[in-house]
Length: 198
Image 1 (cartoon, rainbow, N blue to C red):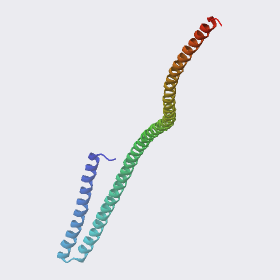
Image 2: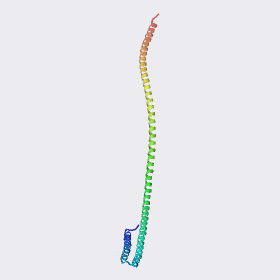
Image 3: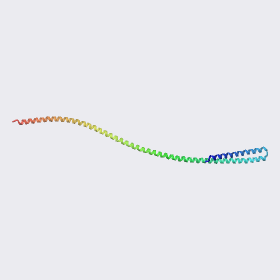
Image 4: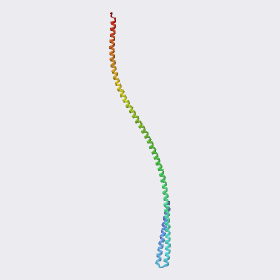
């Protein structure tokens, strides 16, 4: 890239060249006009030749200035292209680094999601197992409840039969006591009769 000082010098040089070219053309015009007033064809011809030479010189100066300005513009465009290429390279490197960072973050997020999905799957399996065990425990509790109700009914029936048996035993004991009393009475009567003389 050209420095501002060099660019300023070139601009001053250009403006000087263009001023010189314009002055040459003005001088050529004045020379022709001045000789035309004299009416001498020889002076007009010489002035025309001088004007032609001055016009050629002015054209050469202008052409040189045009070439220089084009070359400078080409250099400026090349410098801009290099600057843009450098900037593009920097931005490309930044984009690559950013993409790598984002890929790292995405990979971490994916790993975290996979880990959480695995934990969620494990928790769902544990929940299903706990529900199955709860259902089995409920079934066992219901079975035990029905068995307890049957046993309670059987116990109530057994209590009733036991109460009836106690009553029956008491009745049988009373009957046994009566029979025992009768047997004792008969035995006593038999002994009494056996003692009487015939």
